Length: 81
Image 1 (cartoon, rainbow, N blue to C red):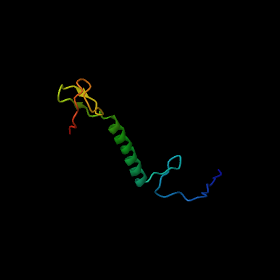
Image 2 (cartoon, helix red, strand yellow):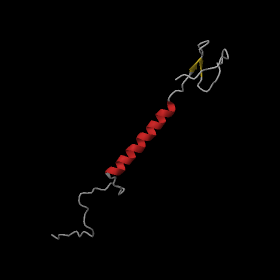
Image 3 (cartoon, rainbow, N blue to C red):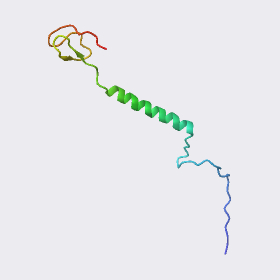
């Protein structure tokens, strides 16, 4: 029987595993990606929150936040905290 030997042209990397695309993510890269993803999630949730409504003190009608006077009775809408 003939035995064939395999010769390595490069030394194997010790302790560092590479993914199939030779893309190795370090701990700092993973942390940055996590922060970016959490930031995007926060911004999406922040944009979806409902706007504040102004309630007329005179008639009690709900008005959108951009109005300065009531849509029903035309009374001025005061800024409420």
